[in-house]
Length: 433
Image (cartoon, rainbow, N blue to C red; front, side, top):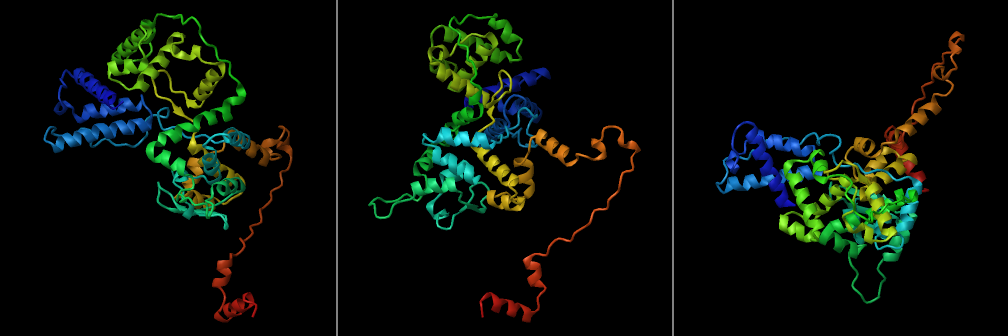
């Protein structure tokens, strides 16, 4: 994948230089103008997360070349990272589960190894990294609290332990005197997996989300048995917005695959990532309607599962990287929404999830659907002049002046207004003296 990113950059730099009748054959031929044009190009092709990785990789390479005296400047140094690309290419915001979907999620995860992680993430709103690295020293089962420091923001949060999570923690709690050395981590296996390869944990939950959210639709998956090409591949690819380099690679991948080569061998021969070959085959399938990947050889249940996972991906068009719309962070969003809908003050929710500002909690996490907001407005404005039948314009509309009620004083305000003698008397009464 990294080699492919360098290839994309080099090819674009050469084409951009040719537009202005110049040459770009060495790193010193890459100007800030070429680098800026490349950055604007990848913002419309990849997710914002991938764009940042590509930018940091190329920029870091130029910095190292500068340090070794091989490059005069770093043409990417002054590129601003604001904006996040166009709306389609920004990092996908995780969607929120409703109560029914959350219950189904618990049900489907119950017989899997990640069930305790699902419960912990849903019942605390913690990020998956904090869940996997949670220690028993942070858990107070008797007091019903989790008190820990978040890895991302480095802030201390105190989270109540709800009943479903308490059952899981009681099951995993170390047993005194069993002869084994207890792990400091609540979920030691998950912690080991996350430390070794966090993507294993990240990917493990996606099929469960797909089943919990989309599984009730039971999509019909048609599997091609003949694999007939519906249209001429070269013509379709040429009219699909791919670059010349991408068109050439797709045709090459198709020819090699039809000749019986395995995707892993094709990737090695073309010097690209294995995932790139899978994406190319998927794009060819969408363009031609034929089935290239071994979907026809697998069971209907497996095919339906793949289709469900595809529904859990943000549709970004052929040739563009997709992004999951439900994942571990969906539990964090769901936790915030459930808490606010239950009437928990936003400041309390902010402290519990570790946000620095209440605006972050409200704007980035609590986004009720438009139809819910419209329904609330309809309910509150029922009977007003705007809700009339068109004949109320001749009626006298009474005007009422709302009564302003002063807010009830807080305990802190009451105590601050007491004299020293009154405070001593209050203390004696509280102590029962």
